[in-house]
Length: 243
Image 1 (cartoon, helix red, strand yellow):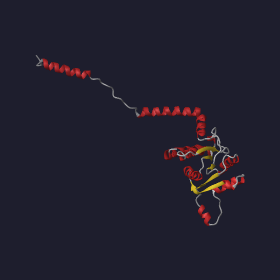
Image 2: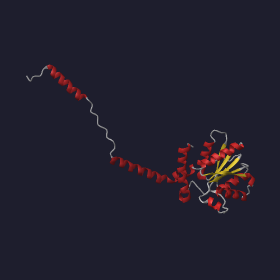
Image 3: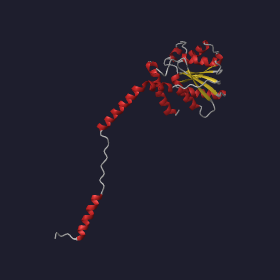
Image 4: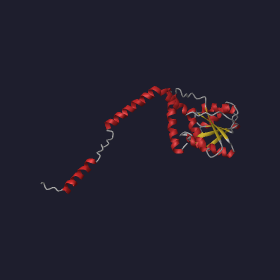
């Protein structure tokens, strides 16, 4: 009556069935900026709450992590790293008098700007390594037990490289590293890396004369700066030297 035949009716029915049988899935929508901002605020308060509640434990662990101390053993060489002459020098004297090693190595930190001008003017101004040697001798270490490097260094990696040359030249098999507590982990990791392909044993012996304490370091400006700088250097050394 309306001009449709049977084939047209069948085709129309199948097309309608095919359309209706398709699954309509909701489109996924990402977080809106507003929702993301709320999540960030929520996470911030969670972190703030945890840090506020456990800040003493967290800060104490951060301080303690920087310190590596091994049981002292008889060794061939005591290495007193440059910097903090008094606390490191006192610890070096203790190690020598306890007969942990018969020889002390002193590195030569980079001289300050203007030092060459003083030399030209004939002014006798001792370098840091000379002051350290004077301290050791005044505290009872014979001058014959001390030897210095003639090469300037301005970082722990360079110091370790020079120590390695002296160790290999003299056939030493064990060293004791004396430094400040906050520097001890990085120093030991550097020496471990430098000597990783040898059988030389390196032990860390942080100075007990430092007043750094993992329990309250954040209360003193000096140690606050030391810790922050040390973690910065740890990251840098990890990326550059893979310690």
